[in-house]
Amino acid sequence: MDTPDKALRRDYASAAEAMKILNVRQQTLYAYVSRGWIRSVAQPGQKDKLYLRDDLTRVGMRSLARSGHGAVAASAMNWGEPIFPTSITEITEQGPRYRGHLAADLVRSGASFEAVAELLWTGELNTRAKAWPVRRPSAELVRLTETLTSLQARDNVLESFALVVLLLGMRRGSVAERLSQGKTLPAAREIMQTVVACCGFVGAAQSYRPMQRGESVVTGLLHALAMPPTEENSEALRAMLILMADHELPPGTLGARVVASAGGTLHSCLASALCATSGVDIGRMYERVEDFLGQGRTKAALVKRAHKLHAQGQSVPGFDHPLYPKGDPRAAQLLAMVFARENPGRDLRAISRFIDEMRASAGLLPRQELALVVMARALGLPRQATAALFVLGRLAGWVAHVQEQRASGTLLRPRAKFVKPVPPAA
Image 1 (cartoon, rainbow, N blue to C red):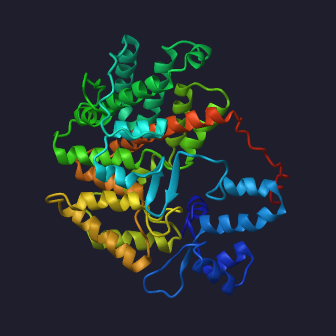
Image 2 (image 1 turned 120 degrees about the horizontal axis):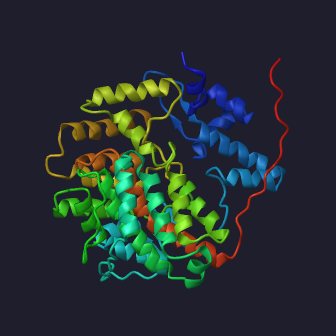
Image 3 (image 1 turned 120 degrees about the vertical axis):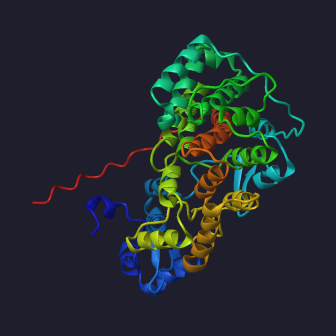
């Protein structure tokens, strides 16, 4: 029997529950499913399907939107209607398109991560972009990283990144001075290179490893994570960073834009984005995927675990992205790279067969979290490395959103709608 906490976290509803939530008949529910508004998953051995609660909530909010602006805003904040315009990234069936360039094509073209970051920031793609100049770390930064190492930063890596980013900002002067100086892009490059160095927290040495002159972001990562500097490893890291560089408005991106709209510095915006990403539903989602996959599991064991979650009304970690009903193209591209590696190993082959089985039996398709975890395993990286690599790539997009929000000159301040508290049960 489910505990109250587990019951609250259920991800799926039965047909009867779905009809009650939407206040519709069975035929209407099926029509919503056929139109792609509500996703359903099959249950092996059973006729009845389960329906994703997030989709039910969104469809319900769409009908409520007719009652006024407040309902529209509420819907927009939960995978609903667009909340404000952006010219940075378009979400397509083929994956994110950065300034008109499909991310998947940028990976295939061999573009460097630095070139993709500059594309997001300036709108221009320079395939000959060189490695960024490397600044020598300050004594204050070195001392902070030593403290973080003693505090086992690898277990709180995103919060550690946020602290380091704030220190970099404070060394550049007061808030007013930094805003008046501009120099957004030089500061962005320094931040990203410093985060590369801090990825050493999750490497074998578990310590800060500063980038060296002439190193690219990918080369610096190879050294910080103590990875063999092979072409295959370099290509894997480059693909991960580029495919994660931006993706519309998850909490981190929204947080960065909110702080930017309020006149925050770049460092404050990015620290806020890092903290917004550090929770269990975003950055630590990778750990949930790791926990689900476990170690040394067979395909049969993984399928059994997935079916058990479905029976409890819970989703399988790492599957089904709301914006990609036909499958997350980023996941497909990364997984293809993983399984094309020479001798991927027994565990990875079992995961590959498990993914195929979930597609065939339940209609579930992998999303980027699963693909990043599987790629990290193929690279022999510790579990904490996946979230670190995700945010390193995403920093590029966050910088672009800070720039765009500043240019808009608007303050992001959604209105609250007061509702009377529900009286306690007698």
